[in-house]
Amino acid sequence: MSWLNFKKEEFACKHTGENNISHELIDKLQLLRNKVGFPIVINSGYRSKEHPIEAAKEKPGIHAEGLAVDVKVGGAEAYEVVGYALECGFTGIGVRQKGGYATRFIHLDIAKNSYDRPRPHIWSY
Image 1 (cartoon, one colour):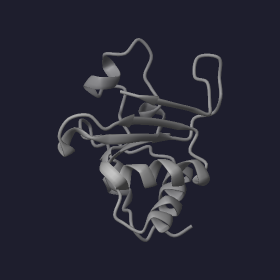
Image 2: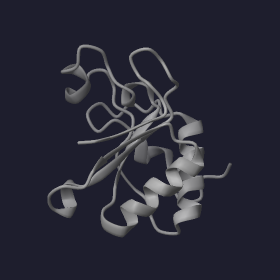
Image 3: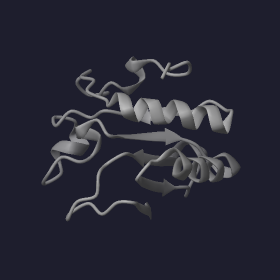
Image 4: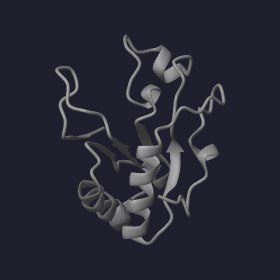
């Protein structure tokens, strides 16, 4: 699939610059973008294991596997993103819609089901 609305650089780790984002994930994001019809802003993409958020964890998370993004979205657009994300095959959806717009986001991932990471799964922050 062509990534008309995304550049791979958008997904680089903000701490180290590394970028091991999954092409399958970007394909699904492009499909989601096509469905919603509005820009999807990447808040956080790939995170290296040295990224402070990942380094603080006992085991690095899905972002460190290149299988997750957080997108900046709120209100009615967040509702659309969640609905279409299910259609597009995202397996993990985390929703933070508290506080001001700047702190709102939706986590989207394509992780596989495992004993310590049940999928499909949705949660709130």
